[in-house]
Image 1 (cartoon, rainbow, N blue to C red):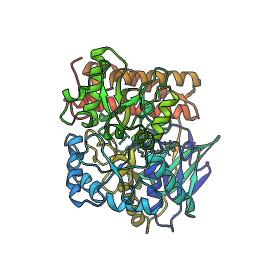
Image 2 (cartoon, rainbow, N blue to C red):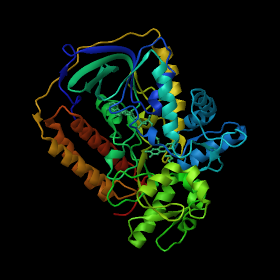
Image 3 (cartoon, rainbow, N blue to C red):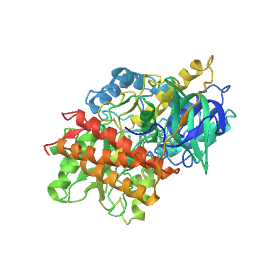
Image 4 (cartoon, protein in one colour):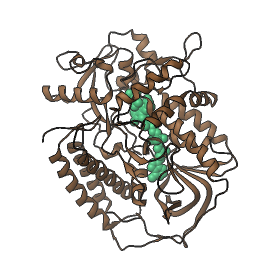
Length: 512
Ligand code: FAD
Ligand code: SIN
């Protein structure tokens, strides 16, 4: 459907670098995988932007884990299944819950500071779908703290080299095996030949018009794996976070963490009514797909662009101390959350589907692994339980590293003579920007919280047209590669959504 490689090259002629392990991505999944690789192996890590520009660094609420209360494991397991509409891979959920504690201990050993009480016990909060308080946090910037600690650790390791501002264009494959990647740094395009490649490239938020995600979240890993023939699954399951800060002028939405509701905040419509009791017995702490649909329904009923989150009944010092980032970010926009209601609306936040892997992160292509948000073990089912994503990054990142350590012990480098040709025409950047904008509009209109068969069919026709147009173009810059990747992911979401003919989890179908 789209040509195999986004750029023209001849492996015989380009510069080649070598390593044992190439990890594409420096979010929680990439960094945690890297620190668990044996120090005798040379690891190259790529970030298409700075090391800090990713979704992990933005994570607010926390990381779910039963650390001391053994009897909580079965509840964490059940809460994960309930949130996921029981579509989850149960084996993966067992692993997630069972291996949480050892990986949290490692994070702490690596220097992560989670919040603690006066007796030095870890504090835990609640979020949507959690029947118990088990979400560890570092105020409202948990991701930033974890990434800080992991970055310090990685930078101390002599076997790991981080290449920032280096864009992976495509993975290199031949004879069913992945042998490295073709990348762009500055103006140079070159190849990295590696015994194994790990895709830890994160999410897809930029496929939608409104998102909580970082600008890097353009689904590159999923799209490049798809071009290479990897199995991509469950793409219809896109999670929309219920409470992004509504701001008329800004489509990159600042998140108001679910932990704010975990600490007692209440959703109200424009009449001031606390409406969640009408929708679910867990009220404001129902699973995310249910809260998002409830908000969407209230917005449509009232013909308003947002609803409101109210935490004004809590102590002012508690709010400022527990949520300093949210307090300050809202204040910058003229909202004092200790006194004012916060305008919020649902926006794209996370994708449950992705590159299909087994429990050790292996894909169907030999030598290609995936972990983190780009991967799909099936652990989240049809809707992810809050704060299970950072946990997934460490639990499965650790498993990927262990598997690689034994896999490459006796392995070899493989180099085949790969060449990509093609006679595409050079396209103007403006046209690319225009197509990218169109795509995001189409997805927001037809593949958002409520979907109809007719809308999805219309979207698919338009997406295919854009992909066909892009296929005749070339342009060696990031905006072109990202545009093709966004369109590829849009295609995968819409075509999987059309295949699922009944509502499940985050995939909600309505009559036209
Ligand atoms: P990311 O952290 O997004 O990292 C992706 C990496 O891949 C980046 O380094 C990027 O540069 C690199 N990359 C991508 N494409 C390329 C390319 N072509 N070439 C080179 N490099 C590339 N989850 C929770 O569990 N708890 C929370 O509290 C929480 N809060 C969240 C708050 C926000 C605002 C957001 C957006 C998400 C939140 N999530 C939370 C979800 C969670 O943060 C993410 O799912 C998780 O961090 C993804 O980690 P990752 O390592 O897979 O990807
Ligand atoms: C949040 O803090 O609300 C985000 C948590 C998550 O995505 O798991």
